[in-house]
Length: 118
Length: 134
Image 1 (cartoon, each protein chain N blue to C red):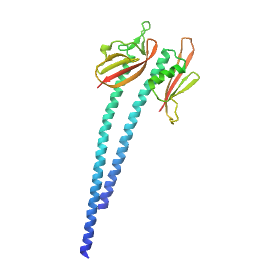
Image 2: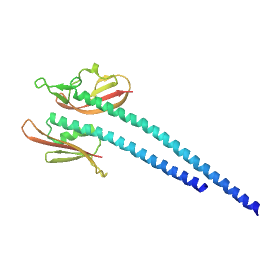
Image 3: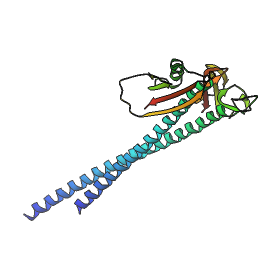
Image 4: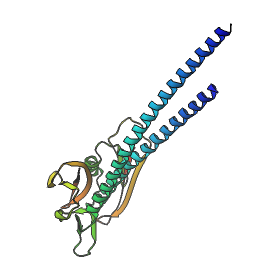
């Protein structure tokens, strides 16, 4: 009987631990989603502003990127030119990116893509 | 012989009870910690929801022509992210601070959270910061 009680308590302990893990995991996902949502908004801002201001120089856009996204690692592609921003040795494989195509005043098609690693 | 056997059985029972108490105390402490963490996470979650709500309000400010977004006089198109500072008095009451390129347009109360957005202001890139009150 004593053995049975100990097994039951052991089982309860295991269940508590599993529950705790599930809870921690759920909240972490939610937190990451908010951070990603906010970063996505800022990428969108950069693209809209680039179109409004007819930006076709990646270095100019880099200055705006850094003022908005601080030290977040990412890249900018304007037509065939790609520049990496805040490069580091840290391995990050996930990217969130947005892109637009627009025609500027000189009637040239401009392709802009902005990506942020996370 | 019988006395020794009963004594041994008693010792085992006492040990068993002690073990049970230790496990119960361990369980209670784990549960207590779990509940405290859960409570803290709920507080954090509600804070996250606040951030989302505020983010949507800021989104409205820069895309709604009744707030900061500009309207093209000829096409009557409302331009998202192209702003002018107007209708400050009609802003939601929980907005306490508005700064554009470090120029302050509104400052009242203690700011709890600040949201940063990229905008076009007077044909130049600018950073709009909206602070929400406590």
